[in-house]
Amino acid sequence: MTPDLDTKVGDLVLAWPQAMRYLEAQGVDYCCGGHRTLREACEVAGRAPQDILAGLASLEAPAAEAPAPGAWMNASLADLTTHIEVTHHAYLRRELPRLDTLLEKVLGAHGENHPELDDVFDLFQALASDLMPHLLKEEQILFPFIKQLEAGQPATACFASVQSPIRVMESEHEAVGGLLVRLRATTGGYQVPADGCATFRALYDGLKAMEEDLHLHIYLENQILHPRARMLEAAIQG
Image (cartoon, rainbow, N blue to C red):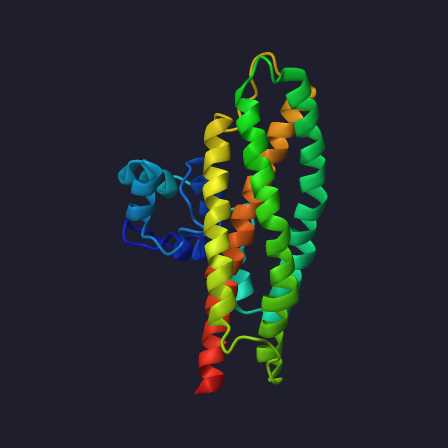
Protein backbone atom coordinates (compact mmCIF):
# COMPACT_ATOMS: atom_id res chain seq x y z
CA MET A 1 0.00 0.00 0.00
CA THR A 2 1.21 3.52 -0.79
CA PRO A 3 -0.48 5.87 1.69
CA ASP A 4 -1.06 9.57 1.15
CA LEU A 5 -2.36 12.30 3.42
CA ASP A 6 -5.95 11.65 2.34
CA THR A 7 -5.82 7.97 3.34
CA LYS A 8 -8.01 7.21 6.33
CA VAL A 9 -5.89 6.08 9.26
CA GLY A 10 -8.14 3.09 9.94
CA ASP A 11 -7.82 1.91 6.34
CA LEU A 12 -4.06 2.42 6.50
CA VAL A 13 -3.63 0.13 9.49
CA LEU A 14 -6.04 -2.40 8.03
CA ALA A 15 -4.01 -2.73 4.83
CA TRP A 16 -0.57 -2.10 6.30
CA PRO A 17 -0.32 -3.51 9.87
CA GLN A 18 3.32 -2.48 10.33
CA ALA A 19 2.07 1.11 10.43
CA MET A 20 0.26 0.44 13.70
CA ARG A 21 3.23 0.58 16.07
CA TYR A 22 4.78 3.49 14.19
CA LEU A 23 1.62 5.59 14.53
CA GLU A 24 1.36 4.52 18.16
CA ALA A 25 4.90 5.74 18.86
CA GLN A 26 4.15 9.05 17.16
CA GLY A 27 1.00 9.61 19.17
CA VAL A 28 -1.24 9.45 16.09
CA ASP A 29 -4.62 7.93 16.96
CA TYR A 30 -5.60 5.02 14.69
CA CYS A 31 -8.36 3.49 16.83
CA CYS A 32 -10.99 6.01 17.97
CA GLY A 33 -9.75 8.36 15.26
CA GLY A 34 -9.57 5.75 12.52
CA HIS A 35 -12.19 7.63 10.50
CA ARG A 36 -9.84 10.61 10.09
CA THR A 37 -7.49 11.09 7.16
CA LEU A 38 -3.79 10.85 7.89
CA ARG A 39 -3.55 14.62 7.52
CA GLU A 40 -6.36 15.20 10.01
CA ALA A 41 -5.00 12.64 12.49
CA CYS A 42 -1.55 14.25 12.39
CA GLU A 43 -3.03 17.69 12.97
CA VAL A 44 -5.01 16.43 15.97
CA ALA A 45 -1.81 14.85 17.36
CA GLY A 46 0.21 18.00 16.72
CA ARG A 47 2.54 16.21 14.32
CA ALA A 48 3.74 17.41 10.92
CA PRO A 49 1.81 15.33 8.33
CA GLN A 50 4.69 15.22 5.83
CA ASP A 51 7.08 13.97 8.54
CA ILE A 52 4.71 11.16 9.49
CA LEU A 53 4.19 10.27 5.84
CA ALA A 54 7.97 10.10 5.35
CA GLY A 55 8.29 7.90 8.44
CA LEU A 56 5.67 5.52 7.09
CA ALA A 57 7.53 5.31 3.78
CA SER A 58 10.71 4.27 5.60
CA LEU A 59 9.15 1.36 7.49
CA GLU A 60 10.60 -2.07 6.92
CA ALA A 61 8.45 -5.02 5.92
CA PRO A 62 6.51 -6.42 8.90
CA ALA A 63 7.84 -9.34 10.89
CA ALA A 64 5.99 -12.62 10.54
CA GLU A 65 4.41 -12.17 13.96
CA ALA A 66 3.26 -8.62 13.30
CA PRO A 67 -0.44 -8.10 14.07
CA ALA A 68 -2.64 -8.17 11.02
CA PRO A 69 -6.06 -6.83 12.00
CA GLY A 70 -7.19 -7.05 8.39
CA ALA A 71 -7.37 -10.83 8.76
CA TRP A 72 -10.52 -10.32 10.83
CA MET A 73 -12.33 -8.84 7.83
CA ASN A 74 -12.95 -12.38 6.55
CA ALA A 75 -13.54 -14.14 9.87
CA SER A 76 -16.99 -14.72 11.27
CA LEU A 77 -18.27 -12.03 13.62
CA ALA A 78 -18.74 -14.72 16.25
CA ASP A 79 -15.05 -15.61 16.01
CA LEU A 80 -14.08 -11.94 16.18
CA THR A 81 -16.15 -11.23 19.27
CA THR A 82 -14.76 -14.37 20.91
CA HIS A 83 -11.22 -13.23 20.09
CA ILE A 84 -11.89 -9.82 21.62
CA GLU A 85 -13.23 -11.41 24.79
CA VAL A 86 -10.56 -14.05 25.33
CA THR A 87 -7.69 -11.79 24.30
CA HIS A 88 -8.44 -8.16 25.15
CA HIS A 89 -11.15 -8.44 27.78
CA ALA A 90 -9.26 -11.17 29.62
CA TYR A 91 -6.08 -9.06 29.44
CA LEU A 92 -7.80 -6.11 31.11
CA ARG A 93 -9.31 -8.27 33.82
CA ARG A 94 -5.83 -9.60 34.64
CA GLU A 95 -3.91 -6.39 34.21
CA LEU A 96 -6.07 -3.73 35.83
CA PRO A 97 -5.84 -5.27 39.35
CA ARG A 98 -2.09 -5.83 38.94
CA LEU A 99 -1.50 -2.23 37.87
CA ASP A 100 -3.71 -0.96 40.67
CA THR A 101 -1.51 -2.77 43.21
CA LEU A 102 1.68 -1.43 41.62
CA LEU A 103 0.28 2.09 41.55
CA GLU A 104 -0.57 1.97 45.25
CA LYS A 105 3.00 0.91 46.05
CA VAL A 106 4.61 3.53 43.82
CA LEU A 107 2.36 6.29 45.13
CA GLY A 108 3.24 5.35 48.72
CA ALA A 109 6.98 5.25 48.04
CA HIS A 110 7.36 8.14 45.57
CA GLY A 111 4.25 10.30 45.90
CA GLU A 112 5.96 12.95 48.01
CA ASN A 113 8.65 13.59 45.38
CA HIS A 114 6.39 13.04 42.39
CA PRO A 115 3.05 14.82 42.89
CA GLU A 116 2.06 13.89 39.31
CA LEU A 117 1.40 10.40 40.65
CA ASP A 118 -1.79 11.69 42.25
CA ASP A 119 -3.04 12.55 38.75
CA VAL A 120 -1.84 9.19 37.42
CA PHE A 121 -3.83 7.50 40.19
CA ASP A 122 -7.00 9.49 39.42
CA LEU A 123 -6.73 8.83 35.68
CA PHE A 124 -6.12 5.12 36.19
CA GLN A 125 -9.10 4.82 38.53
CA ALA A 126 -11.27 6.63 35.98
CA LEU A 127 -10.10 4.22 33.28
CA ALA A 128 -10.83 1.15 35.37
CA SER A 129 -14.24 2.53 36.37
CA ASP A 130 -15.13 3.12 32.71
CA LEU A 131 -13.71 -0.13 31.36
CA MET A 132 -15.15 -2.78 33.65
CA PRO A 133 -18.87 -2.01 33.02
CA HIS A 134 -18.02 -1.40 29.36
CA LEU A 135 -16.70 -4.96 29.01
CA LEU A 136 -19.85 -6.36 30.59
CA LYS A 137 -22.11 -4.37 28.24
CA GLU A 138 -20.24 -5.77 25.26
CA GLU A 139 -20.30 -9.33 26.55
CA GLN A 140 -23.91 -9.33 27.73
CA ILE A 141 -25.62 -7.02 25.22
CA LEU A 142 -23.76 -6.10 22.03
CA PHE A 143 -21.81 -9.26 21.26
CA PRO A 144 -24.77 -11.66 21.77
CA PHE A 145 -26.94 -9.42 19.56
CA ILE A 146 -24.31 -9.48 16.80
CA LYS A 147 -24.02 -13.26 17.06
CA GLN A 148 -27.80 -13.61 16.76
CA LEU A 149 -27.79 -11.41 13.66
CA GLU A 150 -25.08 -13.49 12.07
CA ALA A 151 -26.81 -16.76 12.92
CA GLY A 152 -30.11 -15.53 11.49
CA GLN A 153 -31.84 -15.89 14.83
CA PRO A 154 -34.60 -13.56 16.05
CA ALA A 155 -32.97 -10.73 17.98
CA THR A 156 -33.82 -10.66 21.68
CA ALA A 157 -33.00 -7.17 22.92
CA CYS A 158 -34.67 -4.01 24.17
CA PHE A 159 -33.40 -2.03 21.17
CA ALA A 160 -34.46 -2.21 17.54
CA SER A 161 -31.10 -1.90 15.82
CA VAL A 162 -27.46 -2.78 16.40
CA GLN A 163 -26.77 0.92 15.80
CA SER A 164 -28.03 1.73 19.29
CA PRO A 165 -25.50 -0.22 21.40
CA ILE A 166 -22.72 0.53 18.90
CA ARG A 167 -23.24 4.26 19.38
CA VAL A 168 -22.97 3.80 23.14
CA MET A 169 -19.83 1.66 22.86
CA GLU A 170 -18.11 4.09 20.51
CA SER A 171 -18.93 7.03 22.77
CA GLU A 172 -17.36 5.13 25.66
CA HIS A 173 -14.34 4.32 23.49
CA GLU A 174 -13.89 8.05 22.90
CA ALA A 175 -13.91 8.64 26.65
CA VAL A 176 -11.31 5.91 27.22
CA GLY A 177 -9.18 7.30 24.41
CA GLY A 178 -9.25 10.74 26.04
CA LEU A 179 -8.15 9.30 29.38
CA LEU A 180 -5.27 7.46 27.69
CA VAL A 181 -4.10 10.69 26.06
CA ARG A 182 -4.09 12.42 29.44
CA LEU A 183 -2.35 9.49 31.12
CA ARG A 184 0.43 9.50 28.52
CA ALA A 185 0.89 13.25 28.92
CA THR A 186 0.92 13.07 32.73
CA THR A 187 3.59 10.35 32.72
CA GLY A 188 5.72 12.08 30.08
CA GLY A 189 5.16 9.22 27.67
CA TYR A 190 5.68 6.65 30.45
CA GLN A 191 9.20 7.89 31.15
CA VAL A 192 10.42 6.58 34.50
CA PRO A 193 12.12 9.36 36.53
CA ALA A 194 15.77 9.07 37.48
CA ASP A 195 14.90 8.13 41.07
CA GLY A 196 12.29 5.57 40.00
CA CYS A 197 12.63 2.08 41.45
CA ALA A 198 12.00 -1.25 39.74
CA THR A 199 8.35 -1.13 40.80
CA PHE A 200 8.01 2.34 39.27
CA ARG A 201 9.39 0.97 36.01
CA ALA A 202 7.09 -2.06 36.13
CA LEU A 203 4.12 0.28 36.61
CA TYR A 204 4.95 2.55 33.68
CA ASP A 205 5.83 -0.40 31.44
CA GLY A 206 2.49 -1.95 32.34
CA LEU A 207 0.57 1.27 31.67
CA LYS A 208 2.25 1.60 28.29
CA ALA A 209 1.43 -2.01 27.40
CA MET A 210 -2.18 -1.46 28.49
CA GLU A 211 -2.42 1.61 26.24
CA GLU A 212 -1.13 -0.38 23.26
CA ASP A 213 -3.54 -3.24 23.91
CA LEU A 214 -6.49 -0.88 24.30
CA HIS A 215 -5.65 0.87 21.04
CA LEU A 216 -5.71 -2.45 19.16
CA HIS A 217 -8.81 -3.57 21.08
CA ILE A 218 -10.74 -0.41 20.18
CA TYR A 219 -9.49 -0.54 16.59
CA LEU A 220 -10.85 -4.06 16.11
CA GLU A 221 -14.24 -2.93 17.35
CA ASN A 222 -14.58 0.55 15.83
CA GLN A 223 -12.99 -0.19 12.46
CA ILE A 224 -13.92 -3.86 11.85
CA LEU A 225 -16.58 -5.32 14.14
CA HIS A 226 -18.99 -2.39 14.23
CA PRO A 227 -18.96 -1.57 10.49
CA ARG A 228 -19.40 -5.23 9.59
CA ALA A 229 -22.28 -5.59 12.07
CA ARG A 230 -23.98 -2.52 10.59
CA MET A 231 -23.59 -3.88 7.05
CA LEU A 232 -24.91 -7.29 8.09
CA GLU A 233 -28.00 -5.77 9.67
CA ALA A 234 -28.60 -3.58 6.62
CA ALA A 235 -28.34 -6.62 4.33
CA ILE A 236 -30.80 -8.60 6.47
CA GLN A 237 -33.28 -5.74 6.49
CA GLY A 238 -32.89 -5.57 2.74
